[in-house]
Amino acid sequence: MNSTKYMAAGYFLALVVLTGCTEKKLNENTGSENYCISKELKKDLKLAKVEMRSVEESITLTGEVESNSDKTVPFVSLVDGVVTDTYFSLGDYVKKGQVLASIKSVSLNEMQDDTQTLQAQLAVAKRKLSSVEAMYKDDIASQKDLQEARSEVQIIQSNISKTKKNMQLYSAGSTNMQVKAPADGYVIAKNISTGMPVTAGGEQLFTISNLDKVWVMANVYATNMRHVYVNQPVVVKTLAYPDDSFSGKINVISQVFNENERVLKAKIIMDNNNMKLRPGMSADIVLPINAQNRTALAIPAKALIFDNNQSYVVVYKKDCAIEMRAVTEVASNSQYIYVEGDLKEGEMVIASNGLLIYENMKNQSNNSTK
Image (cartoon, rainbow, N blue to C red):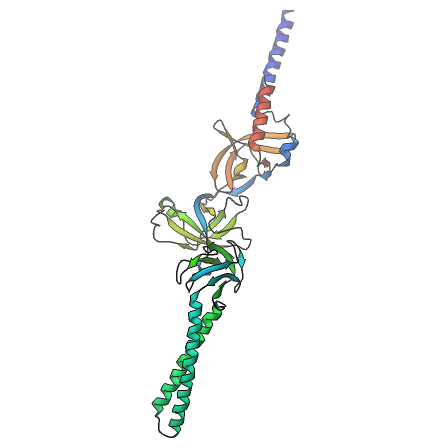
């Protein structure tokens, strides 16, 4: 009888131990056996495959997008006057020869007066030339006299041609001139408005730039100088397009520190056919460093969850088969985090809303053990 009681007690104790072990295992997996992803979370669910990759680290530099100064044309007025109309806005794309503004100027009257004066001088010079040619035939005038008379006519004709070209340059009327776009491109700066007085050779009224190619100027601090070199491949990222990456290489590195920012400037010439890089836009420039001769499991940075001094990933098998795995970070760059742990190549990890799913699984596990 007593032996039967002892056997029953032994079975009960074994059952308790076995149940405890099962609960402990479920706790380690955060109750994944029973957790299902809700329809709301599944809408925005992003998965990433665990890949075995060569370990590459990187650094990130700050920078800014600038227009290509080789294809940038600033405009200043060549005459004094007052702006009567403008026909463009900042950011507009304009074609060469397109009328952008009208300026009323007394200088145009002066050009017209100069033209009339030169025309009168030309008429006198031509009569003088005819007279000298006649005297030269009669051996009264010398060869020198003839050359001087011809030269005077040519000089006046040249001055008339220059004046007419200036008038045509501005499509000038009697008192108004038309300012035309000097090149194809985007208006990246504008400092002209109706009623505004302008002076010849004064401040820039507008700037046009061809943005097919732009410059990304990276800030290189002294601590990063040893990692940066010409022709180094880079990846440019912007806040405006966080999911897009733009590949390029460093073309030029300045040899003198910028006085204000105390940095070297590294220039990256970028193709901009999609027009996503705009002058003035801030950018992050990612440079690969420390390429290592080893491989490791790579996952997106958004797939890693850090909790209580431990890193985790959420492994997705199907909607109601989700597992939490502990991992150890061994290296990282702008694209990947390299990890070690209970994870296999080819498995799928959750790369969006992972923290929310992790918290739900953790809460469910805690509730199930109470």
